Image (cartoon, rainbow, N blue to C red):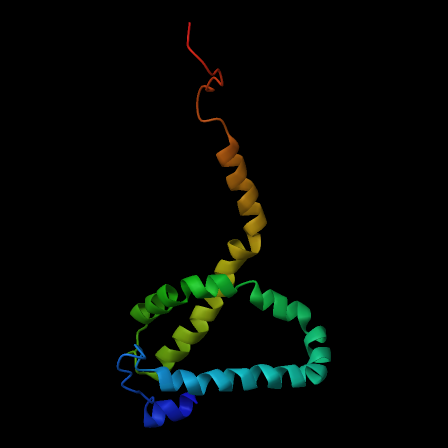
Length: 143
């Protein structure tokens, strides 16, 4: 669908009072395609299952950097593009940005996302430390 929409444009409909989105026709196309995707994946699960089990550790390792990828890919890519000696349209610059971003994200994830339990323990200790004199829990009038 995306290849066709990129080439021919996305279908838009003037909705009037009933639809407030111009993309309502697109939604009606994408919804069934998504359902077909889920049904197809479910049908392929029997043949994909053994392969997924064999590669489970690598898949989990890659998934362990997904949040870091989500948060950091754009600043890293922009930094690499700014540091690139080639113009942005040069294929060497694109290779640098794509591979450099992936490498940097996975290195960064080793010290952040993959160490989240250690970070959590450290912050819990920091936040649990007393900040000053204790507050009295006495309720009622002071003498």
